Image (tube, rainbow, N blue to C red; front, side, top):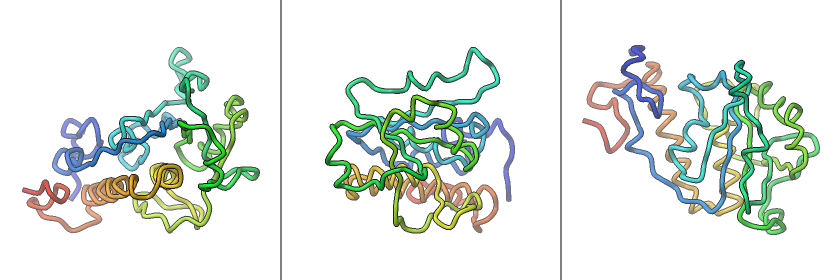
Length: 213
């Protein structure tokens, strides 16, 4: 059962209004600022997880790169926040493991910057945006399996942008504070699967838990 009428789509969470989960999301206040560099082809995709970041956190922003219109192209240097220590999150060959000990060596507050898109699109960001090579690059190690069921992962330890962000914030700020982020992610995945007809549902259970009619 798939409802495709664009006019009935929620402009925030992107799914059909019948499955809208905006009101079920918990807001998470963090000291760490998050800036996600999204490939423009991800903008309209309901499976995009980066869109969930600003819906979950006041300190998260999404910046769109790669737009064909030269006047709208992103200048990555403008995303850096005054007074924050920036770090880039991506599993490059020479990236450092993100750990609590490594974080202790950084001046707070921290600005977490990460790319969003397909693996190929995300990998190109740091090569094309040379300024990102001037900041420390970290990667996640020994993470639990991804719960991202909206796309097929090409790597055994692959995960969505939102999951990577949430795991990184768990290291930086602690698991207790960031636990609601994983709950928000579960809701987003479930509602998208319902819209796609991948999960059996009835009209009374179209909305997320707590908002079902």
